Length: 629
Image (cartoon, rainbow, N blue to C red; front, top):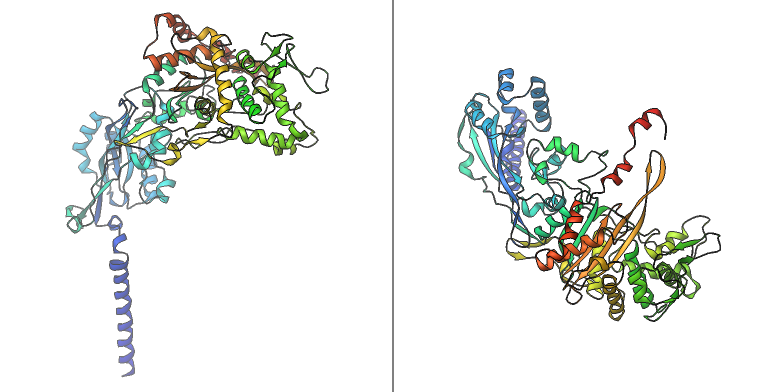
């Protein structure tokens, strides 16, 4: 009797355990149940079409094309003639083993890419034969196509999901495609859509017998959303042409919105190089760390340069705001500025005004180093507190977005550098004042900026004291973006009234100053040329190379429609290359074409190459081999 009671008791307990487990699986976890882990179920993915990408004028930048991948689900593979299969898909037996082991290690019950992106003729032939090889099937896939060879750095590319990401993700499977850079990465969630799933039931002979649970778990795909960018692709293409044979970055912004009109890095590459089966080979070449051209390195967003003379306008604005100068304040220039107590502590100047008083407008137009050295020293040493004075200076500079990532909607960037009092106080055995850091006065000291930061700074001047965060996305489908991050004004710390004299001086730059040879008839351009010293380590020695050519500008003077920053590495004086390139871009954007009067300028810029200067950066192999320098 006692044994019978114990038996009934155990049966009851086991029964409750089973009921509890079934309740957990079907009721509590039923909604999360994934039938893909059932050996009797074959999953079939229905991939959505990735969203198209257009420029601001509706021109197609990124489209789609069909691709065919050979997929494998390891736990469904039956013994096969490996050599015959390898011959069929044109791989070696060793390659087969490597690929199959990789798929097994990832997940034996999940399908993954075995061989990607078949040629169309191979797909047609293989489709007829593949039924003989259980566990293998063909999956249609959408890959990208770029109708226009432009803006590769902006658009980015798509690449395969690796094993690590697939394990962490509840959406992606290994071998699927995901945005890897640029807009493709930034707006992946909008562009990718949502893939559908169909679950097919198989019997014990591994034959599909129909839909699993009458399609209760099936889902339909949802196509990705189309995006409209702020780019003007015609301006982008023209800027790329002008930068052929040169290295550097160009950024153009619409001041009234913060929309990025052009974002150029040079040299660049054809975006179609990172599509299809040749992507791996091409990416190894493009991303080779020994490739000095760095075509995948976005110089417009990431390259931090000394800003040179355009930074003088910043010091002018801060000087006016801090009441250490006025429009009428004058300084004398004797071919340069002597500072500190050290012998030879002298900053040369080429303004051409010797021994006469120089006012603000002339100082900007002629780019006088002496004027801005005096101004900077007054800012920093105001109230005889250099650290506090530099903190104030730094605060003003950063209010223009310098020294920060700006918050734009692209994944690459560099914050640059804007020093403050703590930066110099932290240096051991370094007693400093305005004179010892005077190079910052002319944008040559520790200050570093990116082209997009300087373009944004120029837009803030054009707007007389405010800017919108630069951004690349204009519309999703047909709806304009309403993100307050990109639609709300960012106010600088400089009062509006201080911008007028600086803008007048910038206009004078193109009338009588360093940019006068790059004027455009009928367009009032306001700008500032710049030149930044450039050093490099070549064969173990620090050598001085040709200076970087810089220019910032906006136009027209009234109701500005475009603001630009241009850096041409090793381009020499700002007036030599950066200024004519700037005026050509402004004329192209505002007038739609280049006039006959400036065709000669266009021809000269298109034909100009700085390759001989860049060749100096290449270590001589014969010297390396012999151990000489």
